[in-house]
Image (spheres, rainbow, N blue to C red):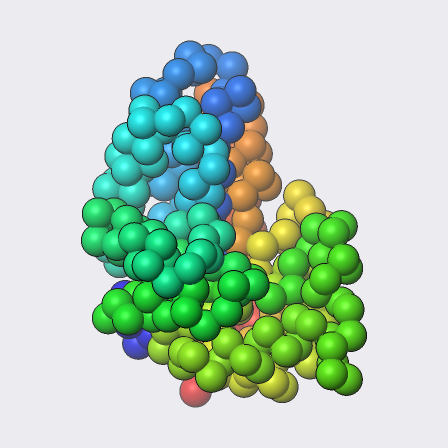
Amino acid sequence: MTREELVYQIFSKNSYLCTGLDTEMGKLPIHLPKNGDAMVEFNRQIINATLPYSVSYKINTAFYEQYGARGWEWMEQTLDYLPKSVFRIADAKRGDIGNTSTMYARAFFEALSFDAVTVAPYMGKDSLRPFLEFKDKWIICLALTSNPGHADFQMQGYEGKKLYERVIETVCKWGNPDNLMFVVGATRADYVAEIRKTIPEHFLLVPGVGAQGGSLSDISRAGLNKDAGLLVNSSRGILYASSGEDFAEAAAEEARKLQTVMAQHLADIKH
């Protein structure tokens, strides 16, 4: 998916919502069996219910990989169900030496039809370059996360700046706003405005709204640019809005609430 296509979807739906399909078999609604077929059917109903409000879906591959080959099949079935009009993210956090990264890129961009994959930049340029060589595909680089351990490395000083700031500045030299995004946790809203000054045009993928305590309005005020420039992810808050037979309706309502707030913020930047 191109940047232009993504921006079109955002302003068509008045939304920058990314729904996370981080589905846990043990948390399926009580009336569904705890197996892979039910997991895929749950995902399909969530997609149907949230599609009017979501421009993107993020599949955390670990939730499927844990089941081996069967899990990959369930993930692929879910991916295939997503319409090509939405931005499809593989939350896989890959990053290895160049030839290995080439194989990862082929896996997610050729064998599977993801539009983007999350990557870890620790091994440097040659570990990310293979992903950037694919046309109309994106990498989403970890920058400033919201987990407790983010301070162990990301916030440490390095040549007068925080390490996450150096990561952003350096990785921006390898890609551009048409194929490169950054992960910034929603609980780090106080840093988003400064990050936006450094990268005014790049998209940010922002997880952590809802269950993890991030504020959608705070993130929106700090991070929106003329093209929106944000994909705000909600997973648990949407997926598990209800454990009953009304789970899809409850998910739709949670997505609608987020989209309503997003529409209000987008109205301020439309031109």
